[in-house]
Amino acid sequence: MTRATITGLGTAVGNKVITNHDLAAVLDTSDEWIVERTGIHERRVGGSCLELGGQAARIALKEAEMDASDLDLIICATCTPDQVFPAVSNRLQEDLGAACGAFDLNAACSGFTYAISLAQAQISAGMERVLVVGVDTLSRFTDWDDRSTAILFGDGAGAVVMEPARRDDRGVLSTYMGSEGRFADLLTCDFGDYIRMDGKEVFRQAVRVMVSASRRVLADAGLEPSDVTVVIPHQANLRIIESAMKRLGIPLGKAATVIEVTGNTSSASIPLAMGAAVSKSGIADGDVVLLVGFGAGMSVAAALLRWGR
Image (tube, rainbow, N blue to C red; front, side, top):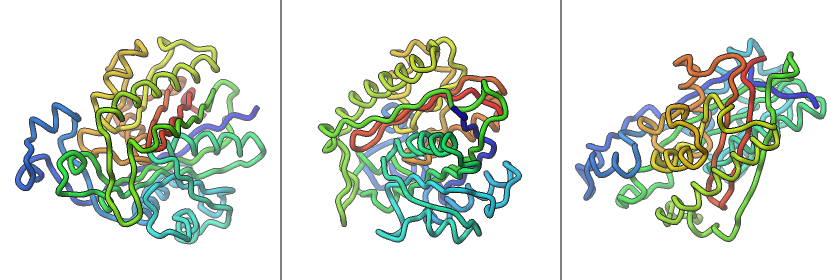
């Protein structure tokens, strides 16, 4: 099987910063209360999916030393498209100047990792260059008068270019995509409404599915938790990340996080955390990187990669 590997990475976030103190001025909450329960200090809002996704994609393409016209496929993971249709990916294709297939994928906060799995499958089937974009603008669906959800969400995008790995021991080692629809009502957003969430139950189920998905991709690759160099989890709540890492037996210091300054950005959260880890030299050639996310549905996905080309 031809393995896909990441050759370019880009990120973008909303241009407006909303701090916990800003929210405390209008809601019955405080910086201490928010940080203790979520780990979030501030979040970024602003911009459309097309704007943010385009910014991240251009950076990823530049890093991959590739022109958009070279792309074979664009996959855009989002649950907050700018329009019902056409897809964000269609707009991105035109905006970037690409001439390829393009489609959106909605697996909520698991979307980016779902898209990584699909990109791997397409490259294994013969494609050469796939652009994966994870972008969400959750602020448009947030009830800013509801302190249980207003403290959580932000806007952002992350994009990666994926190509066939040059070395047999680099790239995607294993992937997993799952869904537990019996928990679909725990986190919802109806047409014309805001995000609604059963926070306590989402927390409990999220830790469980993140751990089970992580163990599955590790087993499929013949590796152990101790072999993982960096974990890049969905950035929903720092306490969820802490609990999942503890159950996996992986030191918390191996988890890449940006939730402190971005909030929950859904499909964008994993690539945003990946970008931060790379910029801090937290991921090196040969490192084993575990991506794992969960989201509304309840969707869950994991991917294990050996970093490098």
